[in-house]
Length: 226
Image 1 (cartoon, rainbow, N blue to C red):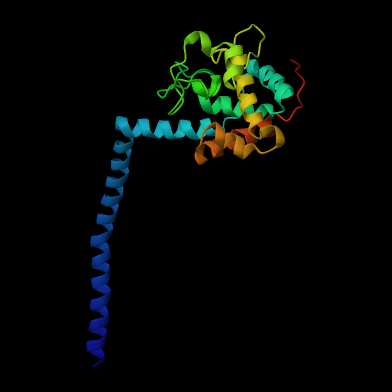
Image 2: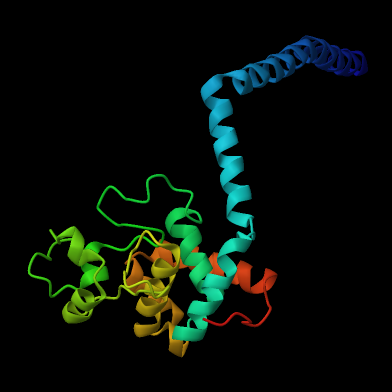
């Protein structure tokens, strides 16, 4: 009886040893195949491009830099309309990546540095306005401050040259400040104002993200006058 038990015990031990010896090479081979396969996958063009795109977006979304040449314009607009200049910078960043978008015209017709629909810039009471707000406003009326005042638009002649032009950076920023300030931002209701600028919860979140970054990295008070 004892001999049978010892034999069974030895058999189990030998079986486990053989199983281990057989399974170990399989594990080693599988490991090297997975490593080689992953290395090759990373070298495929489209996967590499996707990885670079994702990495660039992560870095881009964390980037707190504001081009220095625009700061005085933002600060001057804050003095005029009471809208935090960092908020204006955040909108500029989201709308056209600080005017690096080329052209400064969206597929739906939003124009200029801060991407105004013509009907919002000139005024929704203009007889050609409707739909998304592209309208059929004559070019000479689009930048006329008197026409804009008549139709109740948000376009502003920020630099005092007699033209309210969404493609002029000062006019565009002042117009954005006018819009945001008129819709609550000057009174501290930033979320409502941002949402009215572009009716998207994700847009609000993105603008507030950069606004918070800029508040943290550019905490100085407004020093520029109009």
